[in-house]
Image (cartoon, rainbow, N blue to C red; front, top):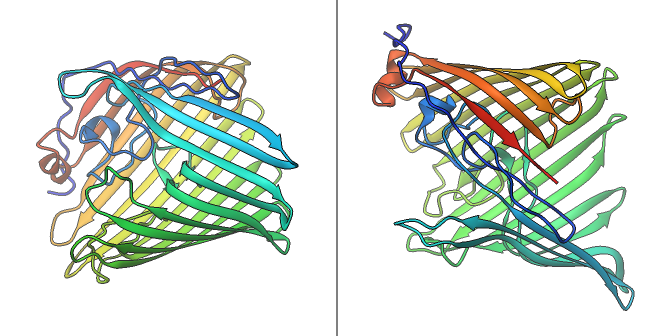
Length: 381
């Protein structure tokens, strides 16, 4: 049964999303298309090509969505100390269930140049911190964002970051988190290592402690043209694999492992990027394993036009259940600024298809196959 395939759905749909961002005291929203923003999961996974609530979504041929960010960033100097104030807000559209308003995603102040430690930066507020991704899927591999305070100081030839966070005031569960981030560790020429440690404590009834460890290595100029990034992560208890909070009531028997690799290359008119993800989650007597192999290839015969193709295969094996598998393909003629594989401004017309096994169809209410077309606009200025 696991190798049987579900017949494609006959429905087609257009997806539209907006994503724009501006810096240096001015920004306006724009339009775009695709899945929900990075870091959020989506139940319409037959469109995005994932298998469950933990599956990453993709950048093209995804569910309708619209978002825009307003980012303000201002630097100034007072008494020899360099300060930087930053705010990022997202307009929230009004509707029958939610009033219109602004979601303040980031608001913090940072200072550097104090007399006793002139090369140490101190910050406090709500901050989007250490969000790294592969640019293939809409998911951050690391994300230390939250409300708290911290510092970044020299440590020999490397640097040391130390941050303390509390849960958001709107969070149902309460807890605290301490992150230790040793970065800019030199390795091979063009290579650098980053080590991140996480300690969490849930303060809710039956709140638990957690421990997380992340190693991230980036190698630039690999074989002259390529770049490679490897993430290794372990989390236990109430800590998350991304360096943030996990379930604040999860006992120490809850453990997770993750390996992510990303390889990117640009050689003249040809470009490409691959992503390999493997995760294993264990909770008490149950466990599950998921894997994803995805890639994007670009061909740019002109400076402002290119063909973009994406192909991904995802697998989920819950304990005691059949293997679930989905394969997804997308093709998108694209107008772009420059030939690079990941520009900040582009307009695409795409057609995509996702096809899954019978087990995946049962998990997704019998709808693992879908064809979708639409347009994708991304502006970043």
